[in-house]
Image (tube, helix red, strand yellow):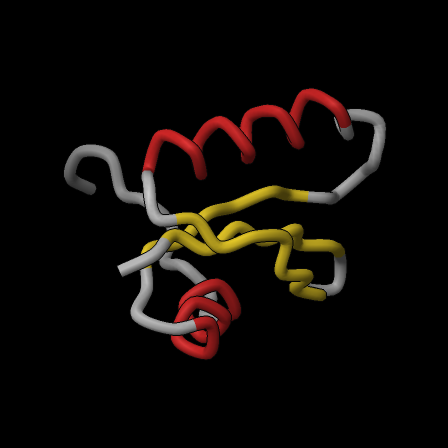
Length: 72
């Protein structure tokens, strides 16, 4: 399964940047984009491991639960 790299702009606008087979290549692309575009507010770069582009976009558009650290 490939890695899909996306630019996420507010309000949750997904822009597909690239599809890569290797994790190392996808990670390097995301890190480079984050360093080059650090001046934009609210823009995120993410990669997701999925079978197809539609599945990747569904994963990225689903709100994530807040992390719980420790017990309440």
